[in-house]
Image 1: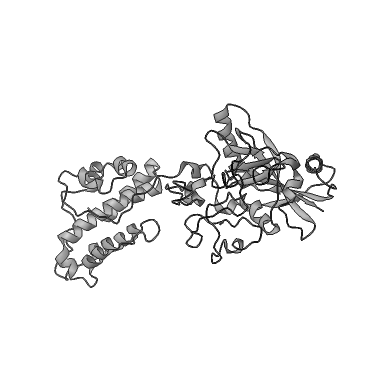
Image 2 (image 1 turned 45 degrees about the vertical axis):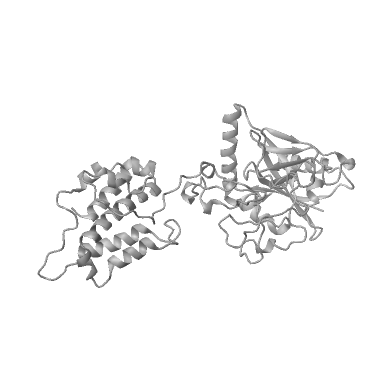
Length: 424
């Protein structure tokens, strides 16, 4: 018996049963750590005489308070190196290598006695100790973090809790504590790319988009459309179709797409076309952040961070500053002139996004009780897909009602950018 053979047997089990890497790594680490622990305690006098002090190093390793298995170091790699060194070590030329494990153990016997399902699904550290006929009494190892269950929403493309932080005031239990490995995401990172296809003025799509843009412009002089581009991004279409299929299964009905408008700063467009709309975080952008720092001091910007809640810079809770009247969501408009108000006057001509919005259960929001009532909302009411606010026209009450209809979406892929209108 040797540990190298055991490692190969475990790899066969992983391949045969198609186990998740995170789970098999966790099981393997537990086995290796137990064997290494026995090894060190059994041969600590010989190990202590090695050029490298494994015994001291191992105890230092266990007691390292800031150790994080997922983010800091691979426990498996460290243990493998230590075990290989011990296996290969000879005390002197005349003495054989020390027996690592009692001769009554074998790879097959160990694997039969280890209940992989319990290790993998119950995720109980050192469960292996209870599976041997004569379990060794080992000290409790506190440095192993249990692998977290993968977030079911992340596997479908979007987890709202990834850019939310828990705050004592305003936001409670809103962040997500599940795992979000890249391997679980339905689209690879390198698949997020877009192209702009300039539509000919005589095509049906151009005529339709031009028509809804001009007809929905309800105030002042109608603008002049210069050109219309189709935004082609297969990754965003894939992610929206995942949501569409979920909604259709739940509703037992076909889900339609609706054209809505979105206005923003010109320097945000490429990022939106590549990755989709950003659902606002509940923390502010920090000027020192390399990702979101440029948003910290915008005169009319929302000031929310683009980072996930792992960012070390963007940590301060976002507070209402004339923004997010109906919650921290993506704001979409039925009227093109409403969306144009969020596009800076310069440069000219302007560019506006036409988004495709999945239909769903709509929560109809009326007049606010006070202007801060909904600012901290991070998702629609239960059993609803988004919030729709009906405009009350010029007679609307300031800061409590709106002039134009607005739709607020809290899921990144319920609405995706589909067309770009250039106008003046």
